[in-house]
Amino acid sequence: MWAMTDRLVGTRVFSCLPAAFLLLTPFGLLGVGLLGAGPAAAQPTWPEGTWTEATTGRPQVSLDWTKPSFDGETEATSLLTSRLVLSGQYPIGKSTRLVADLPISRFGIDDEDAGRVDGVSSTKIGNPYLGVHTRLSGGWAVGGGARLPLTSAPEDPDTGEEFRQNAADVLALATGSLADMSRIEAFGAETFTARGYGEYTLRSAGGLSGRLRSGLTLLAPTENTDFRANVVLLDYGGRAWYDGKRFRVGLGLGGRTNLNADETETFNERSIYFFDSAVQARLGRVRPGLTFRTPLGGEPSDLLDFAAGINVTVTL
Image (cartoon, rainbow, N blue to C red; front, side, top):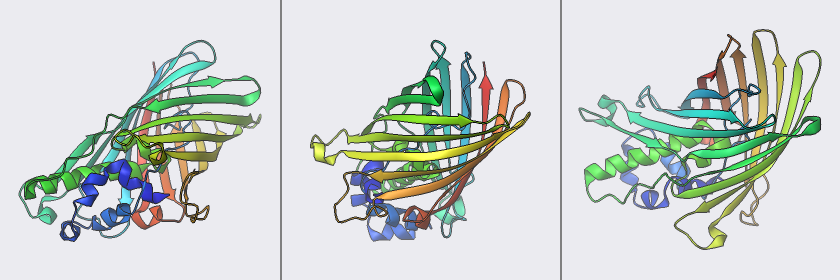
């Protein structure tokens, strides 16, 4: 499953990275971990990419900043090595809303560790998401959308300077992907993504609620016309909430399984699993919050310890 990541962040770049690059930065471990990968996939979002419940009848905008903590020696990475997502929801009718997001990722190495005055860094804009979410009767809801393939893979380097910058570009894409494994395809280079899902929410009078979701995600590399290069992922997960007067707290588990992986791979080998949690405060139309995510075993846990973030949602 994780072997598909190389296509997401640019196979051409990884194919040109010799072993010498692994000495450039402690993120050599990250590069090694991604070398063996094929496409991976996105998060069951609530709706796409957010922990924040929509406010009925009003548009809202959200800003989510996440800082990943990579496994191993990472002191060289700069403070701004992180992922940022700007998202919004717009109601159309009583039960349907449009949802969209724009992901941005940055990777940087401090000057001293990079061995140069200005260091090395890269900021990459990911694939934007456009979708729709509709509430049905009885606690059911459906939704879906697409990520437009606007993220390009770095070109093959011709000089040492281009090599360093292209390596930083690859690591910027990897940083954004690992910060949220439920939507890795947000930083998939030259990859179109389509997804659909259904969910069921059960609420109690005491402020407790639970939500289950399942869906399918299609990842289609735009430079490969062979349909066998496409990947179909089964997304599944659940979240539990407690809603108080001023705060809401939630815990979630999710997974993604590659349905057309090599037949020799076991279910666990073609799957990734993750845990996340959140706390949010209600301050009128402004809702600040904290999030925490971590992989649950498998190859992702060899690359990432956890990702922690802050977010704010404003109801317009």
